[in-house]
Image (cartoon, rainbow, N blue to C red; front, side, top):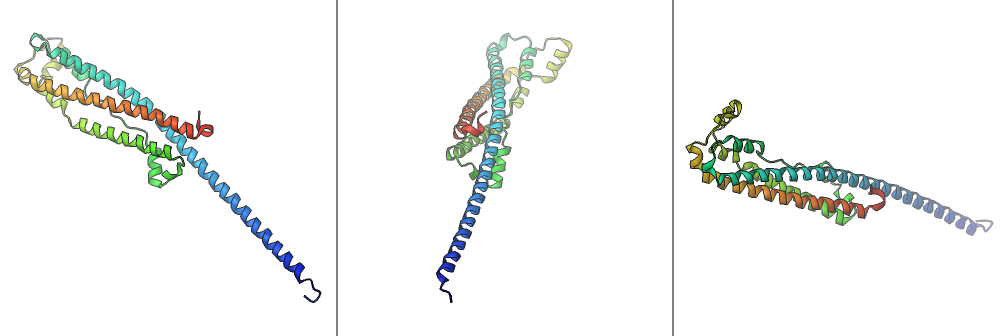
Length: 235
């Protein structure tokens, strides 16, 4: 101050402060860039895992659709043959047809990734809103199929068949290679059996429709992920 250099020192101090501030801002920018990079890498990892789940789902869905269609064909053949019930002298072929096509294959999708995202609260890490919404859309469809499966599992078609076939005699006939004619019980329960089969086949067909719908959404979701993350996620 005595030599009149106050202005120089003041400018020097301001310069130092500016340099410190710039350094802090650069450090913050680098840190933010690193955090954003980590977030995007994690997002890409999640998206890739979802794609892998979807590819596995596609194979499972295709298998179940084909298997269920075979079950439908067998039941329709069963019903067609029942139209000539009075001419059937051996119940074993129909019994074998029913036993070989009993029930239906359940669907269980690969949902580990989406459940991890939901449970961790990280679903918003999927930055693409269309992808995020379609993921929800896809798994909502899965839930509808699970409800249909639950309903179908509650339909006791085996109980109806048990009132139509004499299981024990059919098994003995198959083992001993002897004919097993339908008894009076089968004739009495024929209308209810036929009605139950129609109801069961209708549910199987609706199940296939839902699965085919899910398979289309599966492909659409994979395409959507690829279009939103073309460089990092395309195989």
